[in-house]
Image (cartoon, rainbow, N blue to C red; front, side):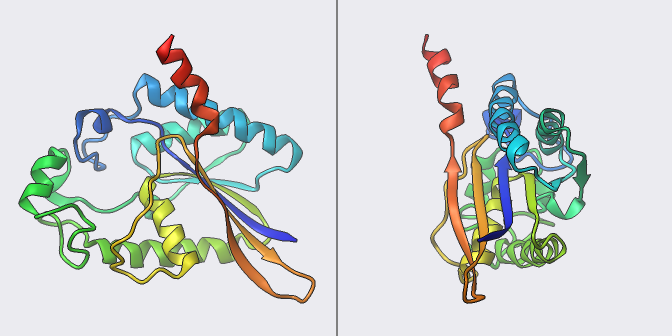
Length: 218
């Protein structure tokens, strides 16, 4: 039996992604038109689920691209948004708004390359971010036990969920692809013996975005 379910929707393509910039809270300008279309497709898929088995909560962080993503989903599902600063992704410090190529060159790699070192003045460390975000996600899981919870999230939030629920050691050199507009699903199973286990039901689902590729090709 599935008890708790966590569903993560990565925000759609943002202008900072297209421009190759670090889209921190100070400089994020939101989704592109393509990003809006990606989220609208995801929302249609989730709305069909919601009619049969409603979601209980929708969470997002305060960054513009997250709020725009959550607003589209909220309208499609008629589900109120809970915004929490702790879902805002890593702190980028002085890197906010800078080209990622320059930031990575200066830091000798991205945030994951040296997980216990800041990648810019005033930034998080990657492991520090994972620890902080994992604690908050655990609090939300405990708070919503037995419910279906939806997140309009950063790709990093999906990685936090995997790190927490798979028990991945901090500083692991491996990672996960998380595409714009993708859907990832975790389910907490309870069997007849009273044993509980988290199962990754689906990672980085993009089937609902296939038509966008066809439209672009036509």
